[in-house]
Length: 229
Image (cartoon, rainbow, N blue to C red):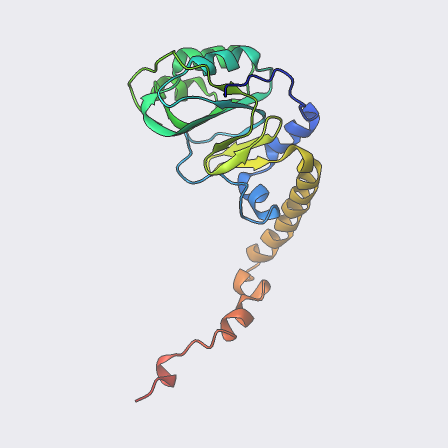
């Protein structure tokens, strides 16, 4: 069944923009390291990239981009298109011209579980783009697809209105309903890491500071002197 939902409950723009300075690693840490980070196959088009945007979700048929064109016209400034193509990488589902349209309309970026094309041109544009692959073949335009429905992208469930946080390390997804809590925890984590950084710059080992030495001792590691002769 093909569905297009026009109404998206977007989080406050100030909440979304606050995540622009939060690394994806921090989001992963404070949300338990499971379930909210896309798999390592979803890679940025270029390095030195940062992104925080509101998810507009797209379910596209593998090899077809008609619904992606429609979604671009529905997106608002600050949105990130998150596209589920079932991981299909043998077609470039969007390219430089579509990305130019997104950039001209102030979208935050694009994420696709599939391939795109025109990688060099897109990288030079500076628009944050993530995908599973790159392929020169052009797409079909014959499947309606769906917009703003729950999708799976990079092994993570993404709902319209979720906050998408991206950087050089990858993509983290912040569920809209817990965004404020995740931001608070992220801020606390960043402040805590500043204190840790000051200690290790003074020569303290994380191994000792975090009690890893005690963990190691409890593992009953046997050294050469303990081996049976």
